[in-house]
Length: 452
Ligand SMILES: *[C@@H]1O[C@H](CO)[C@@H](O)[C@H](O)[C@H]1NC(C)=O
Ligand SMILES: *[C@@H]1O[C@H](CO)[C@@H](O)[C@H](O)[C@H]1NC(C)=O
Ligand SMILES: *[C@@H]1O[C@H](CO)[C@@H](O)[C@H](O)[C@H]1NC(C)=O
Ligand SMILES: *[C@@H]1O[C@H](CO)[C@@H](O)[C@H](O)[C@H]1NC(C)=O
Ligand SMILES: *[C@@H]1O[C@H](CO)[C@@H](O)[C@H](O)[C@H]1NC(C)=O
Ligand SMILES: *[C@@H]1O[C@H](CO)[C@@H](O)[C@H](O)[C@H]1NC(C)=O
Ligand SMILES: *[C@@H]1O[C@H](CO)[C@@H](O)[C@H](O)[C@H]1NC(C)=O
Ligand SMILES: *[C@@H]1O[C@H](CO)[C@@H](O)[C@H](O)[C@H]1NC(C)=O
Ligand SMILES: *[C@@H]1O[C@H](CO)[C@@H](O)[C@H](O)[C@H]1NC(C)=O
Ligand SMILES: *[C@@H]1O[C@H](CO)[C@@H](O)[C@H](O)[C@H]1NC(C)=O
Image 1 (cartoon, rainbow, N blue to C red):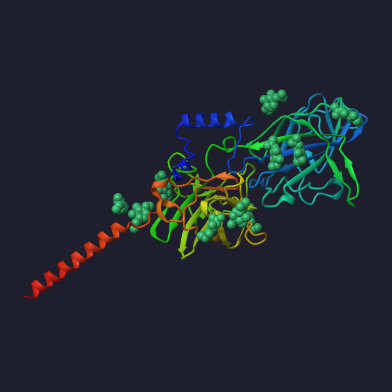
Image 2 (cartoon, rainbow, N blue to C red; image 1 turned 90 degrees about the horizontal axis):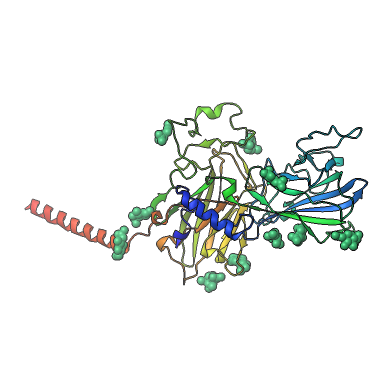
């Protein structure tokens, strides 16, 4: 049954890629579908709050409705194409990365005159007079399941040379959301029912003059060609540790690409600033056969009469990355009967309502919510206690291992099911016992013969 989930990321065959992409695009207009979070999206809402002599002022709010995919530093950037000759007079809580050519203006110079502006969040610590609610977090947005209060980001924009009524305004087109890399696809802006805002005293509603929404969805296919994490397995009933598949995220190649990875404890790591994140956030990976920045190890640790216990360890192999607010999502049929979880937070995900086999796990705030850079502190771990459902529970055929694991929303590559640690074969051990008895009796008879 694990066969269904294995080798999902096998990109050796271009046919498979074409086939998978065809399926993905055939079932979803925006090209993204995640079976564990089928409704996950980022919704961008524009609320026009006032008309100005030559345009309008809008509050733009981004809601991250994705259960387990957050945007971490260096944060989001949002772009769009103006329908006409609009300009941005000013912004609060964000800024356009380029001003563009504003030479047609005399006197008052706009903040941005580009046809296709690109906007980024301001950094924490921005002066209060340049802030609005939910702004200025360096573009970081939490995921909905983990921290819904911080799953929102907002800024205010004052638009000129634009329509000045709900009939003349033209909606911006071609939205692009980067986080900061590719991965998101945004649909067209759609006029929706005007938003209502509750006043601070909670006694009066005001209403946006006009509202439009844009929905962006994520696709791992668009985001990157190679996987970013892998899974290794072990158990108390078999000494074999099944490692991550070799070359999961890349291959060590000393000849053509020396220096693609760094040996553990290497002198290179003592170079000052070597692990400072670079502008393009290129990783500095520790040399491993799998070459993944993240490995998740699932160890079946103990078997009690009515319970069983698993130890999960997440290891960071990237010397240039601290993962803030990391999370994992794991699928296993026994997650409907999780009894206790140590040192991680937990939330069941039921993407299909009735099937309760998926769990989201993340670090406890201020304790282990930061997965530190590669090295002695670069791991987090937890133990999970499951109550057995006697009808389905078994150690046979790899049942105790997860069906699927995500790290920060990215699918992790599992070893092929035929490599899973086996339960020792009853008949094999019986044969060993028989062989042992045979050898012992042989030795006894030999020594008896010798003593004669
Ligand atoms: C986006 O997510 C919200 C919340 O889950 C959902 O209500 C909405 O229908 C989604 N939008 C789309 C276009 O999927
Ligand atoms: C524009 O606003 C008026 C009220 O100010 C409303 O009656 C009308 O339906 C709105 N038109 C559109 C296209 O939203
Ligand atoms: C939308 O953006 C893409 C890429 O930036 C560009 O190729 C395309 O022409 C744009 N479409 C419109 C209608 O502006
Ligand atoms: C537009 O976004 C708002 C904010 O999340 C949401 O409440 C509303 O349902 C969305 N409308 C549509 C039609 O997607
Ligand atoms: C690359 O070098 C490391 C140590 O220098 C070695 O362990 C590894 O086997 C080499 N890999 C290949 C593919 O030659
Ligand atoms: C990770 O965090 C630690 C402690 O805050 C800091 O010393 C280190 O420089 C950070 N590493 C990276 C790669 O940002
Ligand atoms: C799923 O299982 C967990 C663990 O037993 C339980 O806390 C949760 O309420 C269940 N959720 C649903 C929707 O059945
Ligand atoms: C949890 O385990 C108990 C004991 O075997 C069983 O009776 C119960 O049905 C299980 N719950 C679920 C949701 O499977
Ligand atoms: C442990 O599992 C491996 C497969 O990963 C198998 O080759 C080996 O025979 C098993 N050991 C025992 C004692 O069953
Ligand atoms: C385990 O036992 C079964 C049936 O007795 C046999 O078919 C299988 O080959 C055995 N596996 C091993 C590893 O000995």
